[in-house]
Image (tube, rainbow, N blue to C red):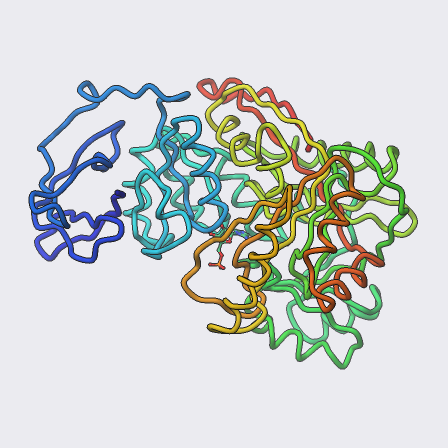
Length: 472
Ligand SMILES: Nc1cncn1[C@@H]1O[C@H](COP(=O)(O)O)[C@@H](O)[C@H]1O
């Protein structure tokens, strides 16, 4: 039984809605556990259904917390990444509250509490944050001005608000990393048609056009193959006023040999991560280089947490940074099964200042992207899930999103095994001929190598961080 709040009634009282029940409570009050407005999960209403009477003013003293950490972790966002953070937290007895506007968001059923408000509702975010021991993120598109204000008031945000400010604007992110000497494809802001044509002229085609903000899961990217494509790409991204920049195309290749542990390889389908192979099939030298670039990128940012560093491996074996996410990442789902410490547990350990740890055999993560809208889409996904459930070493994750859309991330399957060949064979046995073709084609030209990093916050109280970067 879970609590979702707040539902503010007309008289300004806070109301609570119990998970799985439709009716709202009539008796309302605030229960302070670790300073959070939450209700005990075991609570049952008088009629055994939805009516909830909360005891007045139960204070921290009365409720002792015996988890691995007694801090309540507040998470902005409650999608699939939040859901998996909650799973890792529950194993360690850590309490996670999520803030997400959707009542039935994927994390809702697993979170200790769910506050149903919009991310840009600054007053509600403030109220939520001030009551958490530490505030973290599972999506970076949050109101950073509110976070900065909160930090000044002493709220512990991990990673830091200044990191989120840099990361959530992809152009600013590029400027930041270039100032830190991190190699990356050339990039340039574009403000009008002339600027776009000039950039196309100097960078050549294909040309990657990106929105600076609110871009994730393939949203906010468009590829112009010729200069004639420029205006339709810009229009598809919402026009120049949205804030756009271009990146020189980084032609990537693959050296074919199976290699090491930390770096994973992702294979994209329509600009969306589709398959993750862990470890990546790259040489030791490339792994070292990727690790070095990733470490330097993460060191240039403030705060603790898992950072996903996305890199290009070019045909001439250069490693170029694409972007950094200051949170658990799609390319690390397989760490749940193939690492002793998953990226979700690691993120919690890092933001709470606990020791870090990990280890992995080989794994492939296969994203379940919506193939069709509606029932047909669900049925196709469930056919694949049915086959995966029969496959040794395969684990199914279903995000329980209420609607399926084409290319939406609906779940994922992780397959683990002793070697990459072993897990590749298992994946092949799972996929239909059509999927196999898509996989086979993408294998020929994998686009992106990714390394996961994690920064441990050793000394948060004094605000000085000693960072340890662990690579998957
Ligand atoms: N993929 C990704 C990139 N940044 C955040 N997410 C995850 O995607 C969810 C949103 O997915 P959707 O847009 O399909 O509702 C977020 O909450 C987060 O877990």
